[in-house]
Length: 336
Image 1 (tube, rainbow, N blue to C red):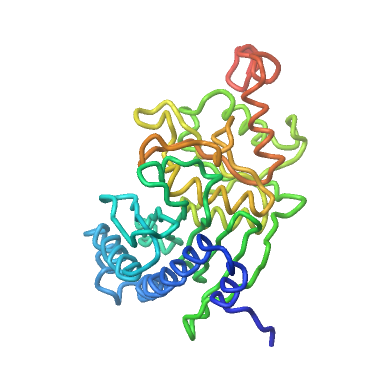
Image 2 (image 1 turned 90 degrees about the vertical axis):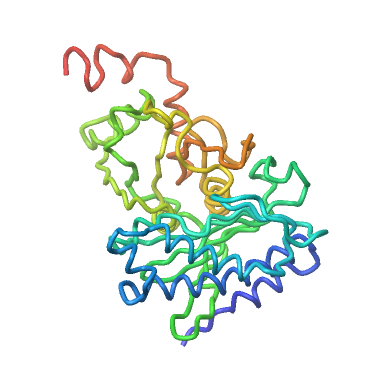
């Protein structure tokens, strides 16, 4: 039987001698305990009172609240100077700690109704007082997420490679099951996008998607599949395993011009994980990890996946009007 390294053993070795990494590792282990409890609640489904309310669509906020209670209890005494939650006030932590934590305790609670994976996202940053959460994503000490699905997983990066851990459902122990994960060199011909928003996208994204829809008859000369799980953890894990691209651009709808993903809580940790595995993450034109949040709740367009595909999207933004983007000969042009 194959033996896997326990998460605490891996962290102890990888973070030795670095105070910031050690603080992040200690906190991550505490969070793993909360994730274990959240995973148990999700797995119990309608047999758990909190989940039953979500399944009946009566009180989805209740489950989010319970998940928050579990994580906040686990973080008591953790070596983090500040805790920023996606919803709620900034919390003070251990004075003098070298790191702070940004966390979304439960992303995608509405997915529980359909038994689709949900997750908890986290990002550790160097403690810099009032400027802590205004630092670019490149400053992250560690970032990643837990995913609650058929398997409870932890995907994380300290900026040098991406690690994948799985929780043993019999013992509740997390084990490293894939060290220094890399995206496939030949990515799957897949893209993930919410096509119902197509008419609101800008011309660059529409043209990029049109070229994949045209398949073997179009400029890509190959057929592509569209995926959309409406679950950021699940989309990220699929791309880690298969490659391809995830597209959640800004669009013309009110409140969507700057995208919907939270830069601090979602885009930064996912971008760190994806880049650590050899991929890329942008807002279409600019690298996600170089952006700074003007406020903790700042949103961003978010495109990530295999480097070749993310770079191709950037080139679509650089194209002048003409060629495949000509109004006369485009997909909805005069002659089509």
